[in-house]
Length: 219
Image (cartoon, rainbow, N blue to C red; front, side, top):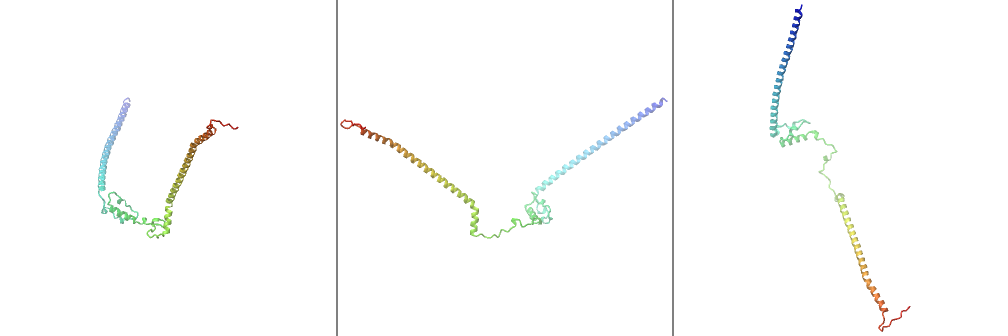
């Protein structure tokens, strides 16, 4: 009886250890498989990147070669055979021959969507056969065109005449003022002489006669 429990416990312990070892072994195998998968993915990624870089280098070299090469009409499709509304982008490159580009544009403008003209377009009128104007009509048109110029010239002349009249009036006023001042100065210069003459006359009337007699003062 005493050995059975110990034997059962021993078997249970061994089984638990086996299960744990199997689990650890399975995890290790899974980890190794994951590592191999990661290594394979990394290797594939490196190969893909290498191929992509090589492809990009080849494309860039091809583009450089294409840009350096001048495309002529033989290298491009026939522009007259492009359907209505089709793309002419291949003719617009910088390396396209100007002659081929001009031919493509000519074919483009021939398409019907660019030839629709309505009656409201001013450039659609015929200006090649205009009626000749008479001398009176030409003079009237010239008068209307140059009326602003002549008006400006008339205004300038009026301003010049007004300025000349103002200057003349100012000069006349200055001359009048100068003449008036000159007359006043002349009168002032003559006044003392007259006073002296009057004083001399008074003195001569009241002066004693030659015989030394004094006249009586009449009251």
